[in-house]
Amino acid sequence: MNHPRFGFLAAALIVAYASPSLAALPNGVASGDVTQNSAWLWARSDTTGLVTFEVATDAAFANVVNTFNAAVVDPMQPVKGMANGLAAGQQYYYRATDATLSSFNGSFRTAAAAGSHNGLRFGVSGDWRGELAPYPAIKNVASKNLDFFVKHGDTIYAERYSGPAQPTASTLADYRDRHNEVLSTRYGMNTWQDVRASTPVFAGIDDHEVVNDFAGGSPVGSGYYNDTQRYQDGLQAFREYMPIADTNYAGTGDARFDGKPNLYRAQQFGSDALMIMTDARSFRDAELAPWNGTQADAQRFLTESATQDRTMLGRTQLDQVKSDLSQAQQDGVTWKFLHIAEPTQNLGLAAAGDRYEGYERERTELLSYIKNEGIDNVVFVTADIHGTLVNNLTYSPDGVNQIESGAWEISTGAVAFEQPFGPTVVNLAASLGLLTPDQVAYYNSLPSDIAKDQFIKGLVNAQVLPLGYSGLGLEGSGIPFTNLMPTVPGYGQLDYSLATHSYGWTEFEIDAATGELIVTTWGIPDYSYDELTANPDLITGLAPQIVSRFSVTAVPEPETWAMLLAGLGLVGLVARRRL
Image (cartoon, rainbow, N blue to C red; front, top):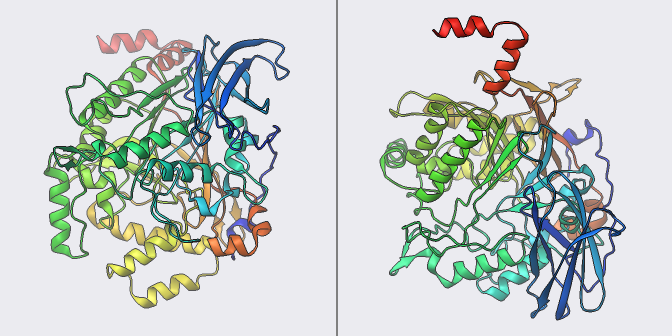
C-alpha cells in the first residue's frame, strides 16, 4: 500500500478510551439519541438475567441520578432503555452491570438548551464490512470529545464481498450475527466499542442492513417490501443493536408508513445546530432502469427522473424535513444538518438510480423549498459512495437552467469497504465505455493518492459538467469557504474537495463565538481483507490523518444582523428604507 498523501500530513493523536473490557459484556456499552433531558443506553450481556444501568454526574458514581433494569432473555439480543430527567448540556457517566456482576462504563453529554451558543463538535461516517474489522480508520474518534457521532447506513453488510465465504444474511439470527461481528474485538482492538462508550450515537440504515438496493416502498404482493419478513428481521436486528428508540409510524394515512419503523430524528443542539436524520431506504419507490451508457438512454433517464412522481424519502418524511428546517430557521438555529444515506449532489448518470439523482422531481422539490423559503446554512451529509466528495447543490425547475439552492453537501466514509470510491468509479466507468483501457492503465500507474484523486475529480467533472451541473468543490457557488489543506512542495495546496482512496470519517466543528463551521475528514490508506489478515499489526497500527479540511462561514441569522446593525447605528436607516 503506497499512499504518499498520508506522508505529508501530521499523524493524529490516538488516545484509548479507558473502560473495563469484560467478556460478559462483549460489545461494551453505548448511548444514543440524546436530547436536552434524556438518552438511550444499551448493552449486550452473554448471560441471561437482569442488566442494571446507572447514570451519574461524576465518574466515581457518587451521585447517581437515574437507575433502571432490563432483562436479558437471549444472549444475542441486547437490552436498552431510556434515562430521562436529565439536565441540558451536561456530561453524564453511566455503567451497565449484568447478572454476573460484570460491568462496563461509558459517558455522554446531553444536548445544549435552546438559545445557547456553546459550539458543537460531532462526527459522521458510514459503510463498514465485518471482515474488515477492527476499523483503525475511526480509532481516534473516542479521543475527540465529540457531542455525538452519526452512524450512516450499511452498519452491516448482509452480503459478503471478500474473506471467508458465508451465505447472505436473511434471517433474524443472521442479522444479529453480523451486528455482533461488527461490534466485537478483533486483533486486540475494538474501535466501535471505544466510540460507542465515549460518544452518543445517532444511527440510521441504508440498504445492506437488509439486502442490497432494496426499495422499501416498492410493491410486493398485496403490500410493500417493508412488509416482508426479511425487512422486518433486518430492521429488528438493527434496532436491537443500536441505542435508539423503537418507535413506529402511526396515523399518517399512508400504508407505506403506518406500522413501520420510524428512524426519523430531528434534534436541536442549542441554537448552534439542528441535526435531522432520515431514512432514505424504507419508503422509496423502486429505482429507474439504469443508464446503459448511450446518449439516447441518457435522455430517457433524465426525463423519467425529472417528471415521474416518485419518492425516495416518502411524502410523510419529506414534509417533516421541510417543517423542521423551517422551524429551525424561524427559531434562529444557525446550522441545519440534513443526513441522508445517499448523495444528493449530482455525480453523473452512472449508477445514478440509487442516489437522489434518480428521484430528481422530489430532489428539486426539496432544494427549491430550501431556496424559496430562505433557509440558510443547510448542509447535506451523506455516505454510501465510500469516499469524500464536496459540492454545492443546484436544481433545475425547467430541466435546462440550474439554480443555486444555497445548500451544499459532503459525503463521508467508508469506515472500511473494499474498494473505496476511486477504484470503484474507474472500474464502473470502464464497464460503461467512459474510459479506455489506456486511461485505466494510466490511472493505475499514478504514483500517489493526490494524483489519483485529481484523476477521479476530472472523471466526475467530465460526467456532470456537460449536463449543466456543478463540478466538485464550492468554487463559484457563492458559499463562503476556505481551503484549510496544507501547501506541499511540488504539489501546491492540497485539494479539500475529495478524498477517494482512503477509509475514514468526518468531523464537524462549530465555533461558539463566530458560528464558523470547520469540516475535517480523517483517513487511513484503504486496505483489503488479504492485507489485513496477512499483516494485522501493520493495518491496526495505521493512524488517521487529515485528508480533507475546509471551513464555511455561517450566514448570520436575522437577529444577528439586527444586533450587528444596531452596533453600527444603522437600524433606523434600514427601517426608513423599508418604509
